[in-house]
Image (cartoon, rainbow, N blue to C red; front, side, top):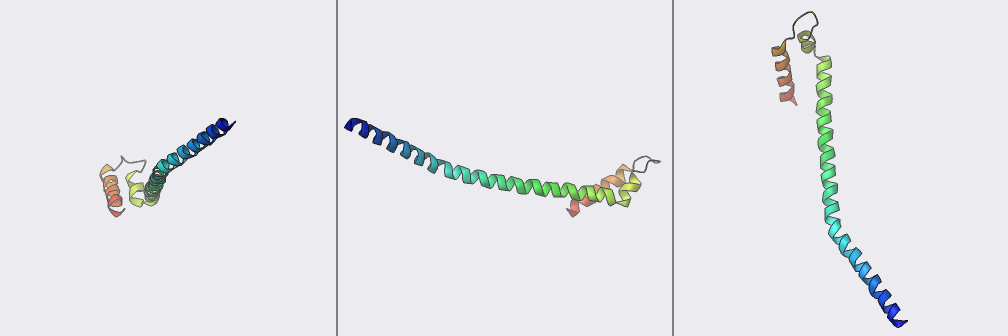
Length: 90
């Protein structure tokens, strides 16, 4: 009976020690993972903002509309200049 109790204490103590060591090793990894997720979210949000701005510029730009008129060939040089101007302003 005494041996069973001692064995139970050793097993429970070992289990507790293992869990604590595992928690201590995982904590920095979980923190770093959370930081990386936050940085990734910020980066994606920034890129989506650029895409939103670009679509807004394309939709509202008279120069782009003129360059893409249906009855004329596309004015690729003008479109290129508009995209360069937009990228420099962003």
